[in-house]
Amino acid sequence: MKTGVRRRDLLALAAAPLLPGTALRAAAVPKIKDVSVIPTEPAGVRLVIVKVQTDQDGLYGYGCATFTQRADLVVEAVNRYLKPLVTGRPADAIEDLWNAMYNSSYWRNGPVLNNAISGIDQALWDIKGRQAGMPVYELLGGKCRRGAMIYSHAAGREISETLDEARKLMAGGVRAVRLQVGVPGMAAYGAPGQKKSGDDAAQQDPVFDPDAYVRRTLQLFEAARKELGGEVYLLHDVHERVPPRLAVQFAKDLEQFKLFFMEDALSPENIDYFRQIRAQCATPLAMGELFNNPHEWNMLIRESLIDYIRVHVTQAGGLTPCWKMAAMAEAFQVRTAWHGPGDVSPVGHCANVTLDVACPNFGIQEWTAPNERIQEVFDGYPVMKDGYAYANEKPGWGVEINAAAAAKYPFGFSERGDGKRLNGGWGVVRRPDGTVINQ
Ligand code: CO
Image 1 (tube, rainbow, N blue to C red):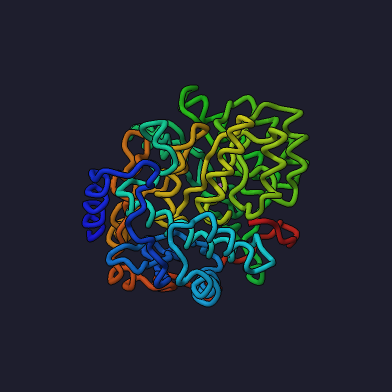
Image 2: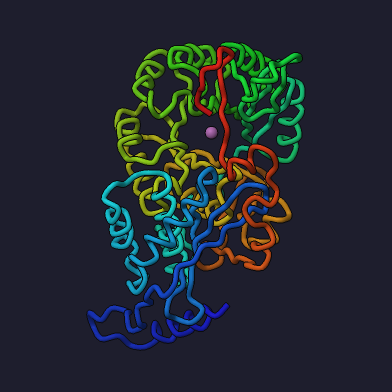
């Protein structure tokens, strides 16, 4: 890597005597020379990576800009709007550039634009780390823990299958497991769907019955505590699929099973109902993967209505706003649980783990293991061992991308049916009466 040359230059400068009051800024400030996008789908999920190149030889950075359901629009937002805005500007002014990008559209805080901003924001942090010869966590003040406790997903069509999956994870050293189970005769979130026999052929969309789902999930947790014991941390994702009144009742009914957290009990549109859940039970609450806008998280944190803020870092605009969000949450004893599924790129997972090890109020990290194709395209996925994820020790995020390998897996290459027809977008979920509900 050519950045090694620059590190040697910096070391030489550091060894040279400085005049009193002279800052160590003899090296030229790198300017943004080019911005490009790497769209790739190695694990069947559309990922968007932004590469920012500087005018200094070999100095560049990568950022995650993945909004998988509208990936093509993020590519356009970067290429047509942000690239012309930032090209030629100093790469080291991250805060200034973030504000420039954020304000330049006038209308702001949407997922497409926030992801585009994140791609450049994270790439600039990568560049700064490579310049300094340090991992990004060092630029945030250094580590305050060795590694980040992770949770993995266990799911099955039947309760026994979910518990078997959980046992396998626990045997591998995982200390926290998210449990989801299918519901007979309907679709489920995070677990295999089940079709009713004799389904109306005209009814193509998956059907989800909130009441049946809640009853089944309570059975799952009763069995889990009996069979898995009291020590393992258990989590569950409601995925905002139940009406607010049922969510309040569900949180109360889950209280006895002592969850690590209950995730997305409400949709962002209904966050006022968190006051009611909070007033009626002590089930720990996690919220935020759909948030784009400070108005969504400010109130929940300020009023201590949640225990974990679990924003999708790129949806909020990248590392810069999320580091601030973590600091704000710390003041209210709210901990972090950054969103970490397969639609976060390996660069994004590195940003997550960087925040995890650098922020004192870290809670837990959602973990997705990389498949072989991901590892072929991306070198530097964070390492997970015995239930903890570890930050890379190389400069920046510590990630390199094999562009030729990325090009082998273009958008859509593994998509079939509706996924292909909808250009990687998601379809529709309905209640049994046909009403469209949240995904
Ligand atoms: Co979720």
